[in-house]
Image 1 (cartoon, rainbow, N blue to C red):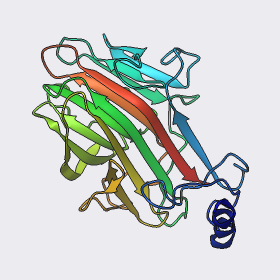
Image 2 (cartoon, helix red, strand yellow):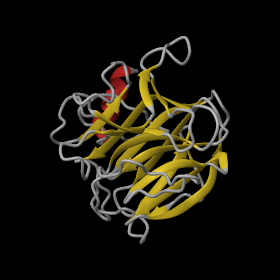
Image 3 (spheres, helix red, strand yellow):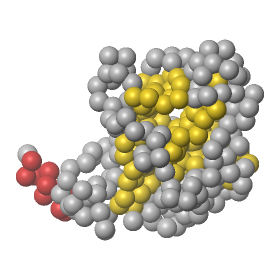
Image 4 (cartoon, one colour):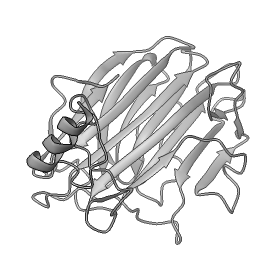
Length: 265
């Protein structure tokens, strides 16, 4: 059976370096990079197994007002690494992490119409509460230090593609984009979330003209967005980003088990 799978890989051209990847689901046809990254793809992946997250030597830059970042215990969350963002208990306190960029601008991933450079993004997240909190996860421009508007949680990043909740609707995750600080909701309430439950949020660029959202590995209808739309951040450098804000009341926590973004070279 193993030999047959390898022969099939050689014949269909998928992941020609012979490392097997899923044949179906969200990550199917995603190139692997372990053998020859020069010709296949590049990626950012983190399982958050180290304690330097948010330090100046980490690949994750932290921006916060009273918020903190720490590793979570396996007993409280999952085996393997988990990072926990705690926004603190005062209204509009927040904390976010973005993949470090040397000049704190731009980003390594770029969606350009007709480029052929397919992109996969996905993260596994868990909210401690679904009351009066704002959660963001996705890709944003490197200049963004606070993507959410105080009081509402609406997007104010310059450029981004992301999933988020609002203070007024903390159980409803929306799929949205921004370009030049103008936000557009591609699909509202793409997923209803419960506290202390794991969810996977992702999106896929087909390399041609369209981005589509996925939840828990399943494609979501009504989420196809044309990358040349006026509110889509086309041809802009973006970087992985996660964040949480306190809308009111107690400290809010966002746990992230892993985050992964892959783009074809």
